[in-house]
Image 1 (tube, rainbow, N blue to C red):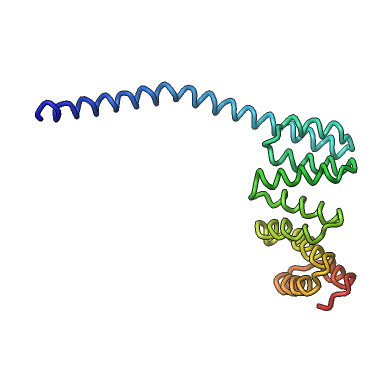
Image 2 (image 1 turned 90 degrees about the horizontal axis):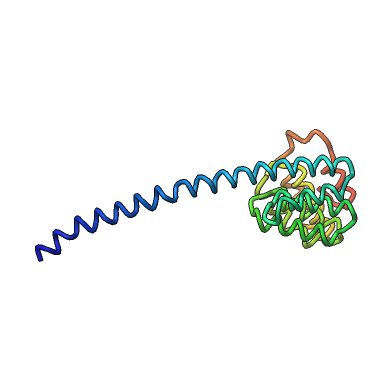
Length: 193
């Protein structure tokens, strides 16, 4: 028994040495991977910036190429691809990109908003409500998101939901509404508020 109890400190010391050696051996690898990841992120930032510039100039093919170069796992690039493909008239392609962006980054209000907007403008306002509601959940003070959600309810003939939504919106924003677009939209859809 005595021999076994003397072995425990030695085994423990060997395990600690092995852990320390492994950690020190992996640290340079981890640091190298971190540097590569940072370089990739910087590269993607530059590509996205270049793509946005091309998009603003109407160079949709160039913007699409730059956004695609960011890779399929870049949610911000997928949003950009959705905007660029929608600008070329490829509605189905834009929906695929917006859906992918929302799946890649569940916390991106912009991804959910763009998906909802594309669905609503593509004739599927009832399907647009869920992503627009998610965008509003993530950014409850964004008037543009709120307005799009109210319009989707109205366009989906969910008049009571739209009416209730507009009432709550007006209550919440009563003091800060500086234009009457929300009210005009409600009246244009024949809603009483």
